[in-house]
Amino acid sequence: MIGILTHHWAKPNLIEEARKLLDLNGSAQTLAKGFVARQTLLSLTDQTKITSIVTWKSEETYDVWKSSRERAQIMTGSERYWNKPPESERFSVV
Image (cartoon, rainbow, N blue to C red):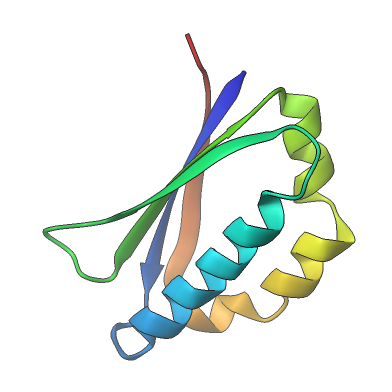
C-alpha cells in the first residue's frame, strides 16, 4: 500500500473554492479501483495551505487514477486556484 502526501497553496481569495475542488476530486477518487482512504488537513499556521493524505493499494492503481479521464475533467483549469504548483510525495505504508 502507498500513501500520497500533497500540499496545495490556494490563492487567498480562492481558498474555499480550492477546497471544494479538492473535495470533488477526493469524492471521485473513492470510486476508483485501488482507492483506500483520504484525509484533508488544513494548516493551522497558513490558511492557504491545504494538504491531503491519500492511500492506495499500489502505485499502479494510483497511476491509473492520476491519468484517468475523470481526474482530468475535474482538475482542468485548477491552476487558477493555486499560488504555486502543488508538492506531492509518495510513501510506502508500513
